Length: 293
Ligand SMILES: Cc1cc2nc3c(=O)[nH]c(=O)nc-3n(C[C@H](O)[C@H](O)[C@H](O)COP(=O)(O)OP(=O)(O)OC[C@H]3O[C@@H](n4cnc5c(N)ncnc54)[C@H](O)[C@@H]3O)c2cc1C
Image 1 (cartoon, rainbow, N blue to C red):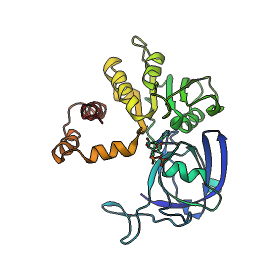
Image 2 (image 1 turned 90 degrees about the horizontal axis):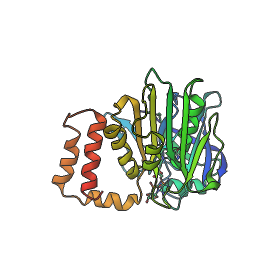
Image 3 (image 1 turned 45 degrees about the vertical axis):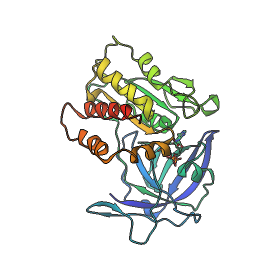
């Protein structure tokens, strides 16, 4: 997968808590959008104070490798909010939160800054008989929700629920009525699980439906279990994507501190082909919860 070197063309505050960065440049020649509304890229950030000095990995048969002697570029995952191939531009909308490589970078972003961008991957994959859909996210999923709405064919009924930190984070979204609810987003416990079960209660006729949910990872464990186990949805009828982990540093430290045998057991869970990918994910997440992760 190619890693493109892109340069900041414009920086535009969207709300008090989200900033749009437009990336452009010759490096984006060959950037191939999938056209899928929630397509995401890995962004590679400068490793030091020089905002134009990127240490981009190169693609080898083993995957991405940083050239020997070069620092490793911090990498984060972001949605491609818009693509304009004619001007070789893409937009990325960043949540501003208290700390973190990306959030700190965007707070000081200005034209001329450089970022690495890989080729995108889309996850939203509705069934052929799509007649209605429910899109539910916290603030990190708002860029994807907006683009999914732009791409939704006329005639597909869409319900949108977004959990935001507060009214100052509301954006205007194309074409549908949105239910905004306030909380979560690192300030309070996320209510995504409750919002999903309220929007699609047990007994809902699920014919022709598709459910897409993105946001804080821990809340989404309950959502995945609910859609799969309580509503009995097949994997083709929903997509649940964890976008960020609360207190990520401590989570990573606790994961790394697990005994080797436990980490090997977690990895092995993916090799045991009982059910499909959703069943495997539910078992994996249940084991993480048992371990306090
Ligand atoms: C497929 C996908 C698409 C995504 N699209 C977007 C997008 O379009 N826009 C966007 O803003 N994010 C998006 N995210 C989420 C983003 O990758 C994470 O929020 C990421 O952790 C931010 O990196 P950071 O360097 O700012 O913080 P990190 O260094 O990763 O984390 C530092 C600390 O900040 C906390 N933190 C991280 N994100 C948040 C947050 N949003 N709110 C509160 N606390 C937080 C962590 O828990 C950690 O304790 C997406 C994630 C995925 C997987």
